[in-house]
Image 1 (cartoon, rainbow, N blue to C red):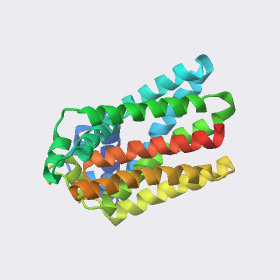
Image 2 (image 1 turned 90 degrees about the vertical axis):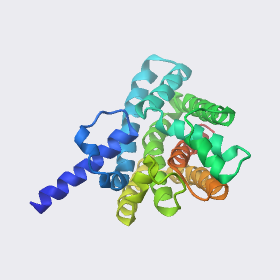
Image 3 (image 1 turned 120 degrees about the horizontal axis):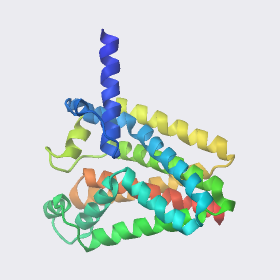
Length: 265
């Protein structure tokens, strides 16, 4: 009975991660246990792998019927659609809050505002533009190895980075907010499981690629994610759900650019 209950709880955690990070519908019952929210962090990299697999399949299909640039545009649109624009929205909110000249409390209030300001528009536009440019280069037949590596690894490792930041940095958002609900339940177990998935994916990527390009992508993404985390720590005293989303987006972009430079430079 205990094992069955544990399996059921673990399954719910996976459903929460899937339902939160993507537009895939999950049963309403998955959301009934708030404790599952934080524990779902353990599943974040695996959900990222699923997003990457969907993108890789789409790239395989689009690359056979379209030139690189139109295919890249559709991939960027699909990437945002699969996640419901969740992390992109977080990036724009974080940019508005962290880059404005206000007090820490006012910056947090700006991030909680549903509107998007100039900094948010610029940040979101730049991220989409760089993703489009990098994918356009990687869709070239001579760089296809880098393309599939990027599509599988960037979403997975980007969500691993989000777990690292959620567990390793103080939370500065509203206690009753969604980010706080997730962060309160996250701990060493979730970090260990997510790190095991991320580490195995990185090792597999290096073995399949036959070169250290996945390590370069991870380091590049890590610097970008750490940069926004440190900025948030300085500006508002901690991280928020929007900052996690921003870190994930910037990790993906930096990883794409690094792999673009390796395979097409």
